[in-house]
Amino acid sequence: MINAMIIDEKDNVAVVIEPVKKGDTVSYVDKNKKTVSFTAVEDVQIYHKIAIKDIPADAPVVKYGEHIGHAARDIKQGEHVHEHNVKSVRENLG
Image (cartoon, rainbow, N blue to C red; front, side):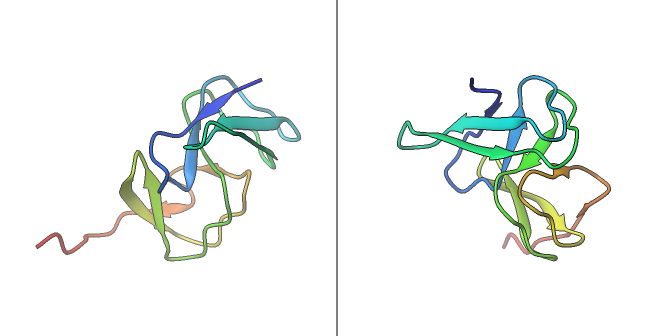
């Protein structure tokens, strides 16, 4: 069952579309229309982000194809991604 979604192939987080409990299987459809699944390592509230792959500390967190911050620490696949592990950064856009 699909319970998460990504918008852009560059995304390293998905948005869960129903509440997810630690140990649940999280599944989304990738750009090739294949279902990708992994295990949640934490509870994640509906409409919150979950890491779809390991994100190293200081690496960009990408949602909808856009950088929304940097990982404040290493984030493992299946972890809840929110203000406790993402830091704001000012990027050079010019």
